[in-house]
Figure 1 (spheres, rainbow, N blue to C red):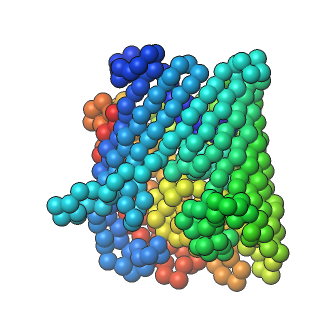
Figure 2 (cartoon, rainbow, N blue to C red):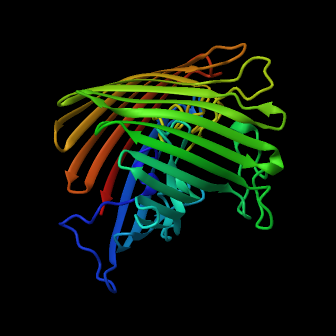
Figure 3 (cartoon, rainbow, N blue to C red):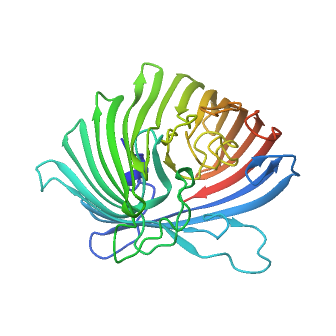
Amino acid sequence: MSFAASAFAIHAEIPAETQAIVSTGTTQITLGGEIRTRGWYTKNLASGAPADAPSAAWYDQRMRLSVDAKINPNVQGYIQLETGDALDSDTIKWGNFNSHLNGFNVLQSWILYKGTGLFGFGSGLKVGHMPLALGEKQFFDHTRFGDDAIVFFMDPMKELHVGLLTVKFAGDGRTSHAIPLLGLPAGALTGSTAKNTDDLDGYVALAVYKLDANNTVGINYTYLNLSAADFSHQDLGVHANGKIAGFGYNAEADMQFGKVGDSKFKGYAVLLKANYKMDPANLRASFAYGSGPKSGSSNIDTFIPYVSEVQNYTLIYEYLANTTAGAKATGLANTTYYNIGADFTPTKDLTASVDGYILRASKNPGGSKDAGWEVDGKVVYNVAKNLAYQVDAGYFKAGDFYTNNKGVTVFRNMVTLSF
């Protein structure tokens, strides 16, 4: 609801055509996994910047294994492992020359208890390492690698869902981290197990109300604290999603408060999406705005999101290239998106999508706001049950915001087997 479905990762009952592993007592254990192989081609992209660069091509691979243990209807445990290497965190580059692949990392590991005994209505507690996201994922989306968290949730009525979270983002003796958008270098978030003033801790409260079967509204508040850096970052977000007749919509607005040192957070962002279905086509349009730096301001006027290094919007800008905020995977930080797109499903096994984007820097004191434009296309074909082949292609024409406004071409194809 307010979280992505994977935020609580409460999996559905085992389908009739599958079988659980036999285990002691009534425990139901299900094994799952995924094997994904991708091929890449890029042109005019060097160190995240559009440039007159030669083409590059490579293959990578990712493997996942999961164990889902349902002890009874109220108690569940989940473990998911994923391959990874030092270069890409989650993928293995091809070319190991007669050597074994790198080992597995823990992607998820959590315990869930839910029931009605404590308050007389549905409630639960989830503890461990898990994917998390808020609202429409504009401000916070850590569904890729997840965070260590304690989640308490309850449903005092069937239309209302309430959640309280505490999230350990960094600290407790872990390796150093950096938040480049805030100017916090690596080493600022090293943390120690002896004290918590050098940890980055998050506290979240949320409520989601279901207006009817198709429409939902919600509100969430996040407080992030790092005492040793005199850092407190707050975000208040409201969101809505649903559909009316053939029209669908998603909307979110966020306001940021707090401070780091003598600078105050004053960023904000808005997101509006709409779609209209008329089989076999789905027409889409969206607008997204994240505030940027103001000339002469001593405050942090840029909207600061916490998002994963995934394709949050476009295939090239923001996912593979440095954005107008100066780094990859910066979401809506100092960025304005205008987007139109369409999806086509001519057969049940084939889906094609095309998207066009106009990209601008929300602010660029003394310079051009023109970040360029991009066109992305995607085709997914279900070769067989649980076996899919996908092809992505994108062209990003960098604007005058960039020193070198060469056009960047990216082609990607992948085959994925899930089980």
